[in-house]
Image 1 (tube, rainbow, N blue to C red):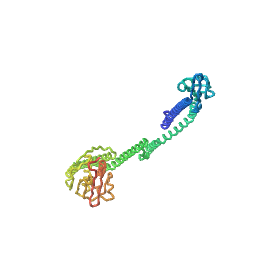
Image 2 (spheres, rainbow, N blue to C red; image 1 turned 120 degrees about the vertical axis):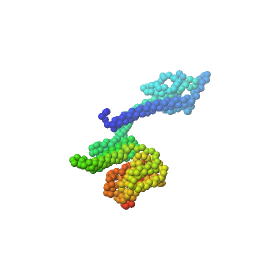
Image 3 (cartoon, one colour; image 1 turned 90 degrees about the vertical axis):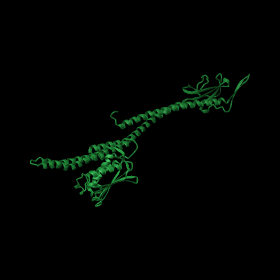
Image 4 (cartoon, rainbow, N blue to C red; image 1 turned 180 degrees about the vertical axis):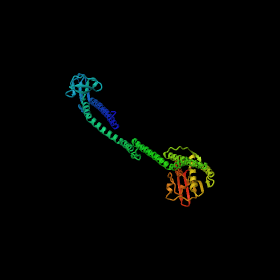
Length: 449
């Protein structure tokens, strides 16, 4: 039994259960049917005897006694045989079955079973005329026995057929129910053999447990594929972007290893190594942040906060860091939203840094309520972004030819996109060459996550 498949075990159990239930049902039907036939036979016998008793008139005087049988008297009513006897047992009227033997004493009471002549009969005696007459009714008890025998023979035919139908139906149901599991196994084998995480079971949505498991399996595969692709992208991006600072550090170390260098040369070399190390650290931290966002593992702490105050504070801090930039901040007061304060601060800072690096020196920040929405807009007066490059600015490490000289990593806007998504917000960019660029964050008022 332990080596059988789950399908076989369920089919065997289903078949055995069907066998037990069918046998019990047939047994119950046979027993109930036989009992009902016996009760019907006895009830008909009682009705026949009592009806015939009402059709007899008895007369008695000093010289003789006599009785009269009305035309309503029916010796074979309700399938029973009725006869009238004197108190001494002498047959006066009617007739009983030929194989019903004589000599059975009269006794009042309910119908009783009595064997006679190799057969069984129900016998019902009813006294009449104050006990001077007896009416005896007799009906064969064979109908119940014939029913029992017929049902037994029928059961031997029906029971195997029902069991076979039940087994076939059970196996069909189990086989169809387990078909998604076979597809799950095939998908898992395909992934294991070919390392193809894009394989899916692809069952149509249904409300049963198997289809729910298949859907959960597909979601798990999608999550695994996403994580795997994110790790691959992280490794590829990191190796590509770390190549240059690593090469610079190695070259500077080799240069500093030479003899006869001045103190200024050493300071310049160490300064170059420090700059590249900081660049590498910043790159790794930003890549890790983006990867956490993509995998849904970023820690967030949403709260209802004053977005107006946050934008004003960030603008003030950025103005002190970039005193040479012309930053104007136009913020409507008392705008609240459900936000992660740290992440939203980072989003605003990244937009401002992007405007400072690639703009023309003038940056404008506005925060407004419009049509039940909150809109944060950061614009600059720079050279703008060509229309064909605008959809690419959200990609990691993407930098236009013009922006490569600024020294950015090309990760700021990718982080902005991820943070906006965490807040159920939409970030859009508008730009025209020579007219500057504007980024707009739109989110529901009073809501964030």
